[in-house]
Length: 193
Image 1 (cartoon, rainbow, N blue to C red):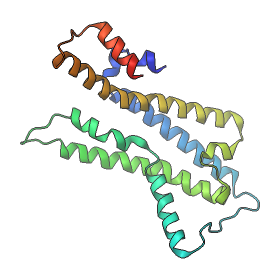
Image 2 (cartoon, rainbow, N blue to C red):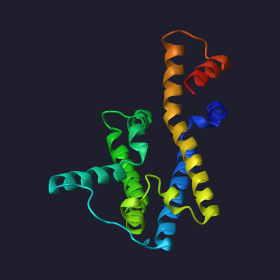
Image 3 (tube, helix red, strand yellow):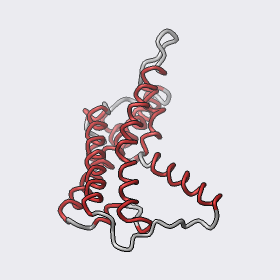
Image 4 (cartoon, rainbow, N blue to C red):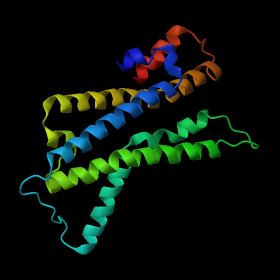
């Protein structure tokens, strides 16, 4: 799929891909927390501490909080997106970028924190790293959620790849004096993918 998508000319703009990936993320997160809530607290659920002392419990809590907060890997592409926003000393890209980051992480928090909290409420310490594995029923809903995950990953990969494609192709054309041909694009993108 990535080999094909990386060659589509309309994928040079990331807004459409980003929108689809975001919708998929919202969809599978909503399925995960709603299905967990519907399932209810499981019999013999264990909420006990795995830590041996208070300090370890403190660090485990904040480590888990960090894992949930950064479950969305979009923070890795922020600098590449910022590099594509026009910036001048009179109108720096910092303002619009900061607003975008705040909105993005608010949406991320609204997606992933309910999954983590409701998943822990439902399954306790026995929740799997992938909550969809813990849910296992109804099968059609779990299959649908996993399909959304796959579509999200395909879109996310394109979000990471497009700035790299642009950077490599620009470097080869401007610095190495390659001609901007279809086969340069074909070779560089296939090598990266």
